[in-house]
Length: 262
Image 1 (cartoon, rainbow, N blue to C red):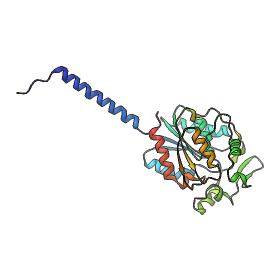
Image 2: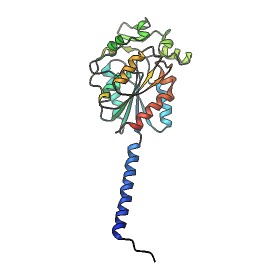
Image 3: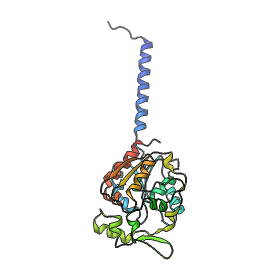
């Protein structure tokens, strides 16, 4: 004959199961990747260069937006990127390449942003400028005459040297097209002093391009170390690392999306 189950024991057992279920559900929620990712381009390019990374992230289930900004002034660019962040429906990972890093360092203070990813990018501290940091860590291109200036104060890379300076690890025809499709960039953006940096209060990830001729790789390493970023180095990568090594870049972004806490 079966012994009757004590009602108190049954209640305690049931309560334990419920509590265990709540614990499991909460853990699952905490492990859910941040679904929104905003990609920000740098100088002398536009958002189309992000397509290889975009395709991987979308295939993996993320909602991805590419923030086009005009490269007419730092204020204009920040406003344009903020506009895209405002459109997101929840927690967001903000990714910046090159000068785009200066933009996400500012826009990253938005409460929707839960993590920052720098791809061969400037991660400025308050009051710093790209020009000043570039003098501390001169890039290979800065020591040439390849950077040109228009009469109205916009900078561009000499198209004849663009492939070697910016995109040495891309197919030549692709690099030549980008050289002739580059977006001229107001010189003023490189001298704009940074405000309060978001990387001081939010987690960050960093990809160093070891063969970068636009930003000195040692400057990239300094930025990453100072921000305590989760860092990878992509050997032999040019400044166009986000195009030439999209798998590694996308993996780093997904790492951020999986670990940044809302």
